[in-house]
Image 1 (spheres, rainbow, N blue to C red):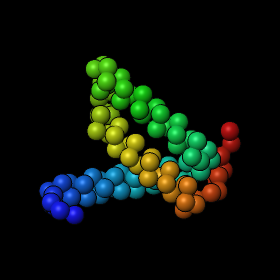
Image 2: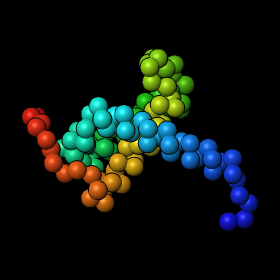
Image 3: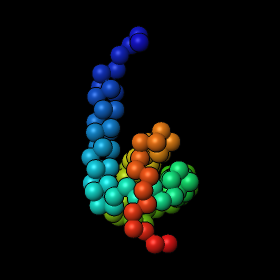
Length: 102
């Protein structure tokens, strides 16, 4: 690659590290089976919910009603769901459903 952007590369790495840390916390709290049960379709619904939230806040300029979830948090959630979807598609996500009754 021609022009290197070490600051951008470092920032990108930091975002990936932050995403991994957040994923670890949520994975420990929720486990894998909330994803396994509905698979890729379930992830798509979760991402769609997050995109709809961003459309309201960013596109339509609606004030954020949730003080505990920032726009950055929503983007990070989408990024993590996208990575989980890749793991599901590659068969690298646990397939068991655990003890879930729906």
